Length: 150
Length: 33
View 1 (spheres, rainbow over the protein chains, first blue to last red):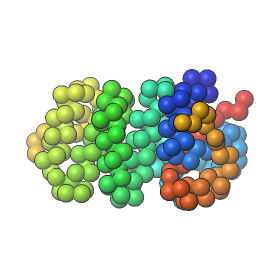
View 2 (view 1 turned 45 degrees about the vertical axis):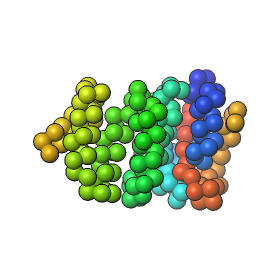
View 3 (view 1 turned 120 degrees about the vertical axis):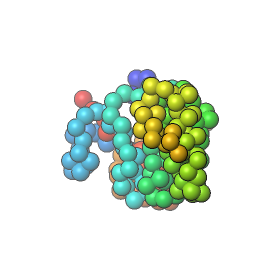
């Protein structure tokens, strides 16, 4: 991450704009134990109270970094029931990072938010159809499979 | 335009900044070698 991803200007600009960046050595206690750290790099998204909502383990390439963290941010707001903020972050991924690993999951959660906000059941089927068309091999397409019947 | 990342190193300070800026925290556990 230090050699490739963090020196990337787009990554650094995004981090400074979108999150409070916090770096802790993996051998730092009690935090390593408190967060059940087992491997590095581990990136964890915390809400403003320091509560964990998602994490990733392993190297993230520069082109995947922004959509990966946007998805983590979206999951914070989803957990907090702040669906407007969830949707805005998910749509950034869908619209600007369609080729990223995060995109299929973003489409899935975007459809779910449609149900949460507007009881848009038909949107679940549309979400599945988009996943099946654009990301047929994604696990998120398989997870959305039941929605084809709606 | 930021050219480098200014990392916070204290979780309590990070939480304080997160609350004041209303931003989530990105916690990076790294191998210090």
